[in-house]
Image: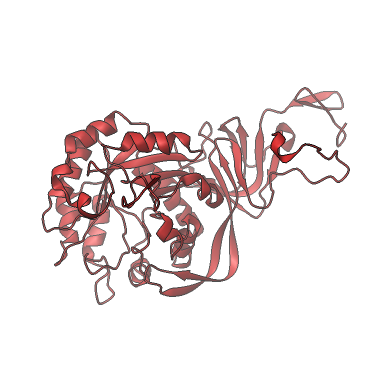
Length: 424
């Protein structure tokens, strides 16, 4: 008997009547933000198994085996970090390809509310199978990937300058044979005045019917961004490092602090502008005037690796918090971190809280106070709000719980286990 009811065989009995516990988990009283479904209000979310079973203004807590009180917190789809580097390994001199600089995802995703990462071109068609076996198939985090147009992948140095290794056909075929994992094509770090690498990547994108993500510009004088957007890329292609301030690349905000007109033209065409913060690719000198002009990112991402996560970037929530303090509201930040990236990578089964969708959920709070944020060139700005993850659910299971929202209250009268730590 508990609280006037009897629990027996998964049923609750009240005065002769019974209510089946039809939900494995209920998130109660949180402020739900689900951009796909235009939800931005207090709602309850019920989960059964690995899927969302119901979203409603009020769901009877007696119908759930476990209830999480999310009052005063935001409940969102699991975050999608669309630019990461996860091909972690133990080989020297390979930059982000089976290397020490790339990071295995599970250690940094769930604590930030991230349930899906998209590796941005660490592997090419020659070594994607190793990446899949080594990381993708062994991660609790959902790991998807852009395939590098360079067959060797993101090995750095001369390898990424080899135009002869940019094979559109082999890249596209590898994607077509690995559709559950590969979402597009990545071009990065090429130095040269020719457009061949961009055009090879777009050619592969056309064959496989997937978007191209471009980390563009390592040339003096810089190639034209307007030409890139209007003459070479297609609607739905992705320009990452949107707020970078680099000598080797034209910027979207000019030397007078004015947003270049071609940026708005490109957005109207359908070019996706991605943050891709990284270790060197987010400058307040670009982000502040661009966002003041209303030019917010389509998608928010980290470009996470060991260098960026220990510098100004830090993690997904820190990048989102920067955008929050630069004028985006909470709903817009969540949209750019969930539904917009899901659409960009053509995985619209993700990034929302519809009934029947996989139960990937983040519970976040917006902390108020005084916080400092650093860009890629060590400039500091103060902000008064910062996002923190309270709890993360991946496929219906609690995988991170900062303050024990899903925990069972400690009972000193309960039997103390006598098992040794190694007994499990």
